[in-house]
Image 1 (cartoon, rainbow, N blue to C red):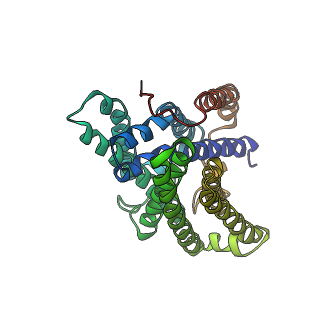
Image 2 (image 1 turned 90 degrees about the vertical axis):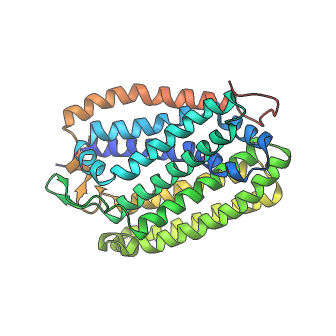
Length: 334
């Protein structure tokens, strides 16, 4: 019998991953835009805009990765060997940008070095996440209960496309964040970046969406047959609505709406991936229930999650509430 606990945990992990994408996505995007900012003052202000929240955003990545290991150990054991290279690259990128946050403010001669560490760490982490996503969508070869593919199966034209799409999408999130949080010349630059990155993101989302159904017959059946076919019309319509709000908000000089619209595009893309995957956790073979730990373990960990998740949500909301509004250019990073 299919366990309801496994389904609940799949939903919780999906929420944790989505929370990581929409929260850490914009601060990775700020790093991706770093070389294109006009001067050191703009870069200082951009980094200060995410300084109070960036490390808290990555809590969700730890929760998602740790939860996968504990709740779906079979999926973890199969996925990690398949994705060693992009996962290692992502972690290395996150380490570099994390160190840059601290060291950039402690040096004058080496500031350019840490600027590039912040940029390169951000773009490597973003691209690696997109490549890993593409590798999962295109399917992982399974032999029994272990990974059955080669060391380079993750590297395909489709995974490279998703890597570029996620990187450009994060740049869109970062630029709309700067529109919301800054003023003056930096905000004007961010508006232009947001328009360009937003248009590019929509083109790349379209390319990925058109390619995905033809990767696997199950994907094609879900999107173009049966009751889920309705999403083939609903999701693109919502994407079009979000895009309209994004570009109209940028044109009218609004602060918050472009950022929320950009986030909505990522949420809709995530929903599209979920529709393609379900009921698999590792397409095309491993389902949620096959990969899940025993029900006793799931129930035990669910009790802990019932305490932990509200706490994480509470301090996340509190942090964003405390640091709401425009950033003061005279404030430093501490």
